[in-house]
Amino acid sequence: MRVAAFTDLTGPDGVSIIDRPTPEPDRHEAVVVVEACSINRHDLWILEGDSAMVDTNDLPFVSGLDLAGTVEEIGEDVTAVEPGERVVLCPNETCGMCRYCREGPENLCENYSLYHGGLAETARVRADRLVSLPDDVGMVEVAALPTAYMTAYHMLRRVKAGPTDLVFIPGCTGGVGVAGVQLAATLGAHSIGTSTSRAKLDRLESLGLEYAIEGTEPDEIRDVISDIGPVDGVLNHLGGAYTQLGLDVLRRGGRMAVCGRTAGGTSEIDIPDLFLGHKRVIGSTMGTQGDLETLVELVADGALTPEVDETYPLGKTGEAFAAMQDRESVGKLVITP
Image (cartoon, rainbow, N blue to C red):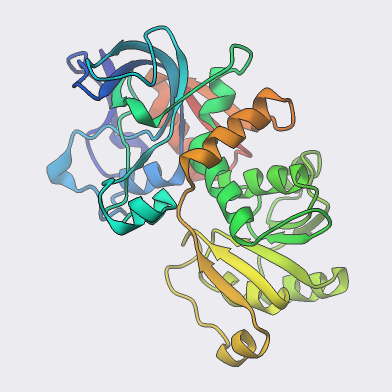
């Protein structure tokens, strides 16, 4: 089978199409014919050599968390899925033994990790991490769900966003940002988003963004939001200076979920504002398999249409990562082996 492997951690030019043996399932596994696999900034960080998970000793490395396809073969102990079943993978990898796995939610697992291997024609996966799909749910659309939409949905749950709440999403044109805008609208919440691109903001407004702010300067953004009103929840996937900005615009008792570091791995915050305002900063990583199942139901019911910017064949995976690096896309980039 063909795979899009990272053979050099230097960016998009480090992707090569190579052959590997077609996998066979172990007793608890399934082999899936991959029909779509979306890519994420997590993959790009690995490809750029900016991840502690992978180094040159791991090359060639096949990334890809978010795969959807058809089950081809199952192991002898598998009962959750059958050959021929249409599925999407929840990429969570958990130990199943620690207190957090026992008590939940699963993404608190002290040995938590993520599946990699979807940028291939077939993939071997844990069968119990597969979510079955209705026949009318498209593979490309559902492959957009696991990382970006699952993360955004879990963050919205963590900040307890609901109807009429106001949610602030800085950098709303990235994968998690777009998902956050769409899901906030699905929940009946109002959203504020920022971007440097007016054209991207226009596109987000068509997806449910109610208040669009063009710019990146925290002081200017703060002033605009103060005229809109106090924010109930913040989805912060940027980190850096946007953490204090998020705290500044939160109402008393408001919540901010943080899931990323695109704008910086450290933040300075005003401690008195935090405790005097009873504000909460909550770390959030990915989501749960139950979150993914809910998202699949939303897609099946027509309540959510994941935003896909462009699809690429497996042989052009490097071009897809170049597009992600250029930050020109809005929505997900999906590889279709």
